[in-house]
Image (cartoon, rainbow, N blue to C red; front, side, top):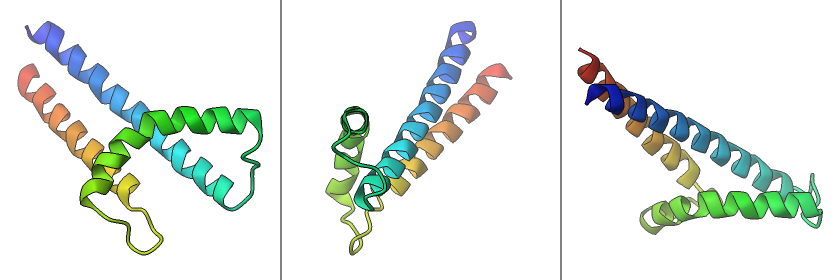
Length: 100
């Protein structure tokens, strides 16, 4: 059982790492569009923005339901990062316990 569960948990941890990078790219892209550094009318930027929105927005929406923005600052990406970090730490502990 451990021979299947440990690699599965490791893949889940890597998937969470990739999702963190998606969130980082989403935040940076939103800043670049907001400050008019990149043109949101560009087809590539628009397509990338939509794809990232579809990946990130469902998790952000759930967080925003419980945590309102502080002034003009949206803290939901930070909270999402903390949740992902917590899940990865739990996965790491479970892997250590299963390997022992």
